[in-house]
Amino acid sequence: MSHPVVLISDPLPTRLTAELNEDFEIRQCTGSNRAALLAAVPEAEALIIRSATRVDQEVLDHAPRLRIIARAGVGLDNVDVDAATRAGVMVVNAPVSNVTSVAELTVGLILSMFRHLPAAHASVRAGEWRRADFQGSELSGKSIGILGFGRIGQLVAERLAPFEVELLTHDPNVTAEFAFAQGVGWMPLDELMSTVDVLTVHVPRTPATTGLIGARELALAKPSLRVVNTSRGGIVDETALASALAAERIAGAALDVFETEPPTHSPLPHLDSVVCTPHIGAGTREAQDRAASTVLGAVRNAFLGLPVGGLVNPAATAARAATVTVS
Ligand SMILES: NC(=O)C1=CN([C@@H]2O[C@H](COP(=O)(O)OP(=O)(O)OC[C@H]3O[C@@H](n4cnc5c(N)ncnc54)[C@H](O)[C@@H]3O)[C@@H](O)[C@H]2O)C=CC1
Ligand SMILES: O=C(O)CCC(=O)C(=O)O
Image (cartoon, rainbow, N blue to C red; front, side, top):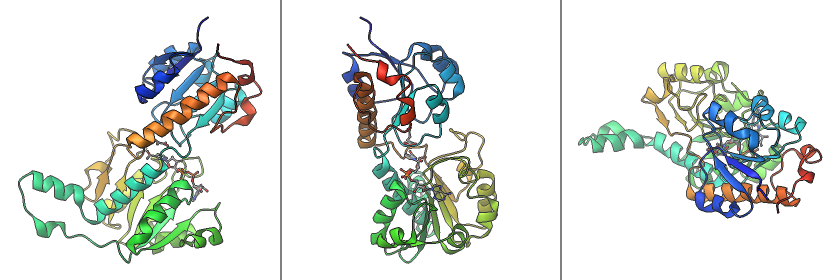
């Protein structure tokens, strides 16, 4: 009897995916290569992705056998969940798998900006010893604004608290009382923008959050503002950010994510006041192992008819998933 085909379209630890070999036929493709994805997906009954694979109506139209899309990570902005639900395809993610890693990277990026670590490192490597050129600022005493007080935003707050900073947040779905209980003040967005020295962004990318930080919001900022984005490109408008930085209307930015990845045509990586990383927020062994284990478990359970963890569209299950089994 043939095994269900599981298509893996982004890198996952092979020592973990191998655990499915007995009951499933594992196939790989490169999800960022659209033609390769569309060629491989028709036979797939499960599709495991990370952020580089876009799953939209076209992919679903090519995937008549598909029963589950498993996102080995948090963000679902690359999956058309409504279209999947209409097609009866379950969507799962791994919502806690990498949040610690992202929070740790965020703290690292903030310190990197305040102490010019990438430039100082490059300078020593180049044989220089320019101590006076790398005078930085202390984080102690600064105001930190956390845009989005969900899992990652709260972990960032916990990790920054020992630096003796003032912690503030804006999140329409969080009450001032909830934030206050964690030592964090709540403010409307405009007030936050005009108050903080660091704005760190931790919201999902949706139509409502795309361009949330644009020219108008940046115009409210103090000259000391440094913007950190480890959530998704496009939430901070890149054109507005580049123009505020180039005009020295704000002090700096640290970016793990970009509107287009890689950011080949963006001016931002070339500005001295910008620190960049290539979307590595979840790039730790621990986070990758957790994400893979979570979604592989979900795929196995889906085919065994067991409860599926991380399910984001329960309405899909009635249509197809209940009918499938592994041998
Ligand atoms: N750089 C990387 O490798 C990674 C990036 N991420 C990104 O981080 C994002 C956040 O992750 P989590 O904290 O786990 O999500 P979460 O769902 O726990 O928290 C998101 C928070 O944003 C808030 N929010 C929504 N709209 C808002 C608005 N207009 N203004 C202010 N707050 C708003 C929500 O109320 C929620 O509290 C993910 O959606 C993903 O895009 C996640 C993991 C890895
Ligand atoms: O999945 C990835 O490749 C990066 C992680 C991420 O951005 C997420 O989990 O939202």
